[in-house]
Length: 108
Length: 116
Image 1: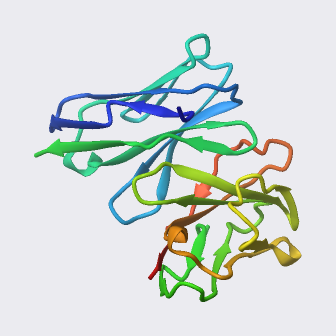
Image 2: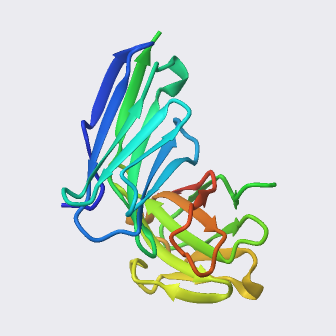
Image 3: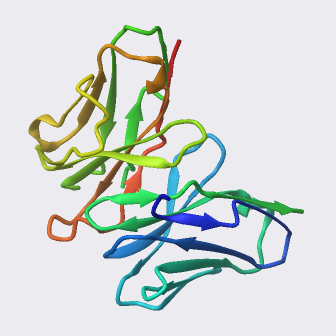
């Protein structure tokens, strides 16, 4: 299996609802980063959480990291149609190791 | 501050031809990375430059791929000769700190390569 496996693979929610995406990784990391990719566009960095941090907030984003379980979650609160995109987690040591991504659809 | 730029945005070539992709990192970023996403697969690391030196090229698929970063500024990735399985999106990323090479990586829009 690849490091940075996200769960679920696809998620469809109604605008205003919260979206929770989970990620597991296998090897040791210095930090874990979440990215978003809109269709046909590049990767946009969302948030970075270091291995000695447990939770971090940025606007409507909340990320947690559990190094004992080698897992992370990304919560988007009060989702909007514009949040529709693919989301990737990436474990970082000297390079990023990505999962396949989660496709989030937010219905207006 | 200008972001990471990549050229071209799309390239369609025939098997056996040569293609050169270019990446201009954010000014002042010492770290430059190349990644690739083949359709349906995850984004995979290719290599990492620190200034003009190759720090890690463990992800380069084979010797048909050659990356350079002359002068520690922009980088090129040449594929020669291209094969069908080289098709995909090639991303470049850069980050600032030399001591913390796991700092936030900023990605370019990618180059979509199609080999026919």
